[in-house]
Amino acid sequence: MRIGYPCITRGLDGQQYKTCRKQNATEERLIELIGHNLNVLEQMIDYNHAKGIRMFRISSDIIPFGSDLEVNHLNWPKIFADTFSRIAKKIQAYALRVSMHPGQYTVLNSPKQDVIKRAVEDLRYHCLFLDSLEVGREGKLVLHIGGLYGDKEKAMERFVANYKELDQTIKDRLIIENDDRLFTIADVLSISEETGAPVVYDNLHHKLNGEKLNDSDAYWIEKAIQTWSSLDGRPKVHYAQQQKGARLGAHSLTIEIEPFLTYFKKIKDFDIDIMLEVKDKNLSAIKCILATSDKQETSELYKEWDCYKHLILERSPEIYSQITELLNNKDHYPVKRFYSLIEEAIQLPLDAGNLIEGLEYAWDCISQQATAKERETTKAYKQKLAKDTNELSKAKRYLKKLAVKYEADSLLSSYYFEL
Image 1 (cartoon, rainbow, N blue to C red):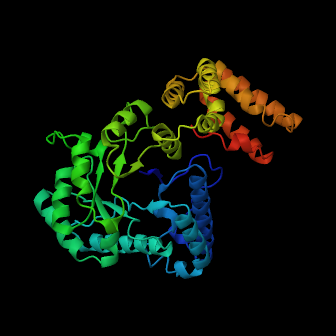
Image 2 (image 1 turned 30 degrees about the horizontal axis):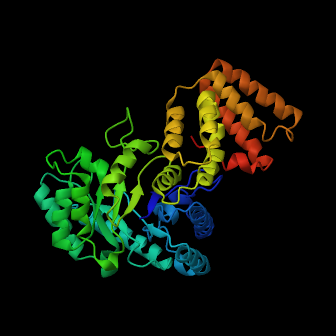
Image 3 (image 1 turned 180 degrees about the vertical axis):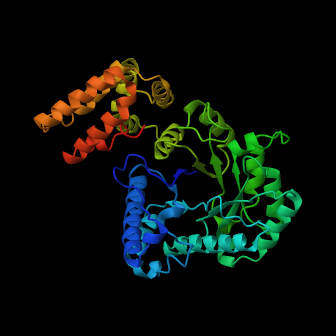
């Protein structure tokens, strides 16, 4: 079983995808952006390998205007053939499963032909990208069914009809997912019977859009598994938690360990891969991997604690001390308690005194190299922070600028600037 995350890797300083406005999308600019984005992808793949993450969803934005041939008519697979080949070799060597998820405007069941045409072009772009990485059929494209357009039955029929007209290369990769408002898991399974498309089950979507379907996650996962063939690779599911206080369907900031382990206990005997849909991305992936690992190596918790400790001190010195004491006992593997304490600390209201203590702890990583002016500026930020906790983001931005300047790698690779 693999556990993965989508698109963005938190804690890789400065490694974000770039794009541009359509009017600025010259060939030269597009080549520059694609080269940068592929370099970012390669670093993310290296990071995932180092962290033991073997499942990753690649952002659809990696090739700017990839499906708009009027804007981007570059033969980018050929231009970057060497780069694609190098990344492909790493994906294979690392046994990393990659996928993509076309966005909300890629709609196959629209009553408008121009919308369908654009959807097919977008699916071709995604297939071409995965083909360029030499990814087999196990590299999937996840798609929702689309809209209702006033008649659910006809909307489903249009999806089936349009699916049957797709290129075989797209059919080989396409998997379909239940959504949180319109099409239930039962609807998607029905469409799968008509098309042969494998089904990916999303637990949060089912919770919000499956009130008449009382069966458990395990029941529907078993049904979804039956839609996959051996050529499709291991069946995959999506797992998410509702963000408290946000709109229904909003993904949580982190995967809370207790409910995840309750879910995992019920589905662990299935031969599946789990894609986490969560705001903190790789941080939750590492958490869930360590929480379900058979190895149970406390040294791995120490590595994660090195990444979290500046952040936790900022939120709660008391919890910081509790975690330090917890990890001092090397004879057990307290992964559940470790992450429960971290989650508790992150959810606490901000306290000016704690924020300043955390800032000073982080400042120690660069204080010896800082100039007199930088010391004064940092002091001024602490004074502002004492009066208003909303100044925290400004203070951290300044400290991060100094960390980059002085190559404070231990601080930059931590989660202090991420949460």
